[in-house]
Image 1: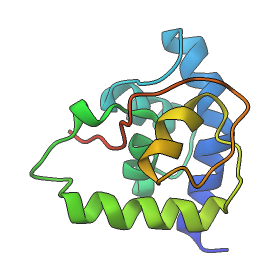
Image 2 (image 1 turned 60 degrees about the horizontal axis):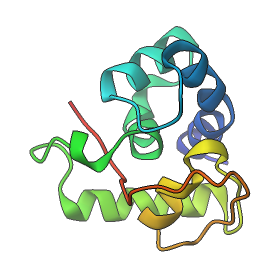
Image 3 (image 1 turned 120 degrees about the horizontal axis):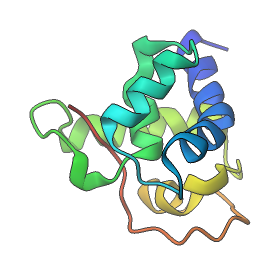
Length: 119
């Protein structure tokens, strides 16, 4: 498993609870909240754009940083890293829509189709 894939797995596993306890509720969170939590938890900050993809609303997207093509490529990377049928916890509703429903979820978070973020 690549470092990027390992980071994505850790984001998916550790961030939902940490973000909820820090900022309440459920996704979406702001890019600043996600990046701060990644840093505070000592997770790999090099790939924190993927954490934003998982936990931020598309409206938080920085167009100069996240082009449509880049987001599409990142979605493919995350789908490959986590595998079809992976549970994404509270963000599954948002991200399952973002990757075309490739993930199964039992969290019932709904979602608005958001998929990326940036600063």
